Amino acid sequence: MYCTRKINDDYTWVGADARRLAMFEGVFGVPDGISFNSYLLKDEKTVLFDTADSAVVETFRQNLLHELDGRELDYLIVQHLEPDHTALVEELLLRFPHLQVLCTAKAATMLGQFFDTAAGKNITTVKEGDTLCTGRHTLEFIEAPMVHWPEVMMTYDRTDRLLMTADAFGCFGAINGQLFADEVNFERDYLDEARRYYSNIVGKYGKQVQAVLKKAAKLQIEMLLPLHGFVWRKDLGWILEKYDLWSRWEPEEKSVVIAYASVYGHTENTANILACRLAEQGVRVKMFDTSVTPASYIVSAAFKASHLVFAATTYNSGVFVTMEQLLHDLVAHGLQNRSYLLIENGSWAPTSGRGMKKILEPLGWKELADPLSIRSALKAHQEPMLERLAGLIVEDMKRERHAEAASGKPQKRYVCRICGYVYEGDALPEDYKCPLCGADASYFDEKTEPKKFVCSLCGFIYEGESVPADFRCPLCNAPADQFVEKKD
Ligand code: FEO
Image (cartoon, rainbow, N blue to C red; front, side, top):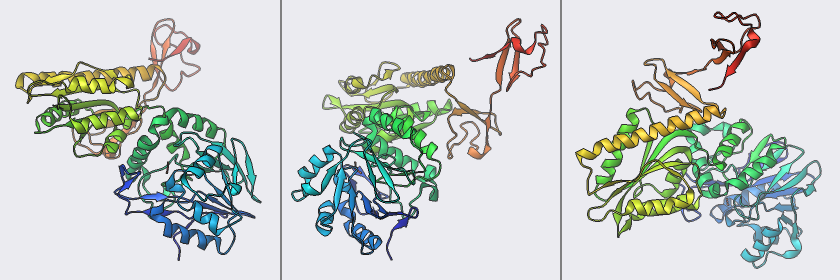
């Protein structure tokens, strides 16, 4: 009768999906909805982990009361005080007069700021390492400041090894009854929205996310339970690795995002030609018209890609307004470790290149060349310049690959069985198409590179997993222990 989901014997999801919310936090479009998760623990005591957003208040109330089935609510743990998780705090305090609210000291202060009647006597503040025994379960509190507000904490259930992660590991998109990430094709259908959620909501706070990941690494965790999106009970390492990459501002793949702002199509045409030159060299390109695509999607794509190109027309002696907004957004989110190129356009006084560069300066990115400047429209004699810009990006990618190989960072190679084209990266994207013959991802085989061992006496190279103990160098007859692994 009620849309709740059982998590295990004692925990139940009592949250709700919102599909009529046009803008999350008033700025992020959520065309596929969003879930507001809340978890109920029924032990000797009853414990609710966060409430929900006012958009789903009816469903949430019904779910909670149904699952309580007449029992009192003993504890409300407020892990994050942002209103999308606290819309029912006051109502619960009125409905359950003995309810104890547990939260950090900062959250207690904010409760007083947000609510007039949030009674102080019901609030107990907790800090890092404090515990609460509810009968069979022992809960431990873990402070997680700035993931995504300063008052945030997570809760670890030592008994069932569950980590309630507040906003971390959240995702845009309604869950549609599928509470667990393994009940959907997450990588295909939700990874982009998880990245968009992370990069726009928490992206600025990579260092704080890293600090929490270090704490989490010391725990035995069987499930991650975030406040939005899916519960993780399988492949925890996979999503933790994504969070590790994102919070270190490391790109997920060698690829290019081209964002352009074009009034009459000439800047767009220039960007399109550059995309062609890049694709011809096997580079994956994603393009965005900043006047059409909301900034949150482009910010997210920029977190994924290694190289960024911004092309904008000059407007009011500055940068075209939608590009200006995007660049400020990227700076606000503190994206690091990127290489970039700029293309400016202007019919009488092109200045958008200088303007874009100034906005991006605080990020300390590597600019691969001075901005390419065009007057009104690209001319035939400028086309080779786009070829050159594409070449600079390709060269930079090669340099980065070499640096990564030298630092021991693994790079996989996938070979097309039809034409032999080689794709390099952490993983071959599911929708990948061979740039030479058009074969889809199923035609690619992962190629494992043999290790190389060099004979220290004559330089002969042996290729394989290891040098057999009885191997003798065919040139100088040196024994196996004279071979050393070649690292370059
Ligand atoms: Fe889901 Fe930071 O609120």
